[in-house]
Length: 204
Image (cartoon, rainbow, N blue to C red; front, side, top):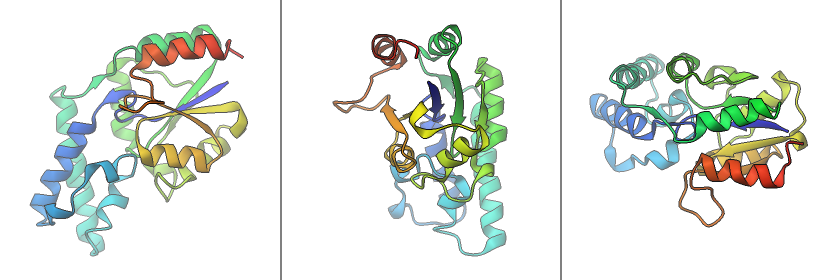
């Protein structure tokens, strides 16, 4: 089985940093905070989110850079941490000879930097916002992963934390497991998800 895993708030706890970076960007560019709803932004690229509020192309370009610089500052200050149990899950995948990759709406530079900080080593690599045009909930991020890594949807499992991510994976016909959400069918953490897989997949 191949695993396609979301990054922000799935592998690492970065949602608060992204939300704060967006709020500061909204304030700096005098965008209405009344329309601010981070849960709707989760899983989407910064460019796609801000393009809904900024029409001028040059201003949009600058706003994307501004937001990413703020987010990078949170990485510098170590305000982002790895989710409990993920490194054990990564070891479980390696031990059972299963492959995995990251499918995210974040930038490749930020994801790569955080991966290096925490020794996160996706065997397939990283699908980031630079690899596609339409972010989650569009299925394009997952379809891009299937195409670039030569995978079949029925031989993959996606792991997501957001509604946008779940919709994206399911629209690409990939089974999706949900983690870190307070929902009846979601896994509370990586430890419980790993225990489920050990019982139900038998590493096949």
